[in-house]
Amino acid sequence: MLEGIVLAAGYSSRAGGMKLTFRINGKPLLQHTLQPMLQFCNKIWVVTGYKKELIEALISKYPQVEAVYNADFQQGMFSSVCVGVSKITSARFFFTPGDIPFVKPLTYQKLLEKYGKVVIPTYQNRKGHPILMNSELQKRILAEPQDSNLRKVLHKFQPVLVEVDDKAILKDIDTLEDYKELHADFSRDSK
Image (cartoon, rainbow, N blue to C red):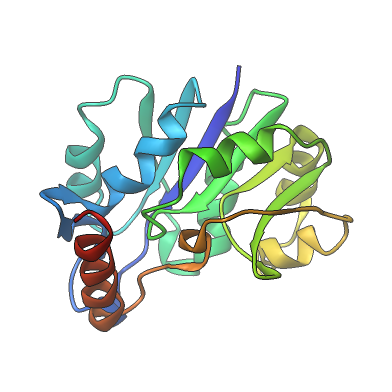
């Protein structure tokens, strides 16, 4: 059994709209993010917040994906991390923000081949997502004060770094320009 957490609770304010609903190749970004993870996870928890009904509609076709609502999403990303982590029952779990849509399935596979409390992919020595964690992190994350963040928790562990040939681990969408650039890259790569 392996689980995953995808964060999808934010306002997307810098993107000028609900970025996880933006479409590339006919599919919303969130579905692109979920697809490679679905190949490895029995259960994926998508943490919702702002406009949760839009996110719930996007994931409704996936039986192993379940929305979990963060009533405190306006307090920031760490509150959503905690809501997602509180649902985990597996010994290891993947974690990624919902706005990193084109990670290759092979990247997930390579992370699973390594053992460590924290396994992080790198591309040209830069850390990215998804992150593979073991259940010890669950207790540590949930014990943190509300004003903490995931980076503070991860710094307490020596991560296993896995170099991958996948620049998508670094490509998140924060702005409309990021979306347009990613859309152009995807269109070019799929020709």
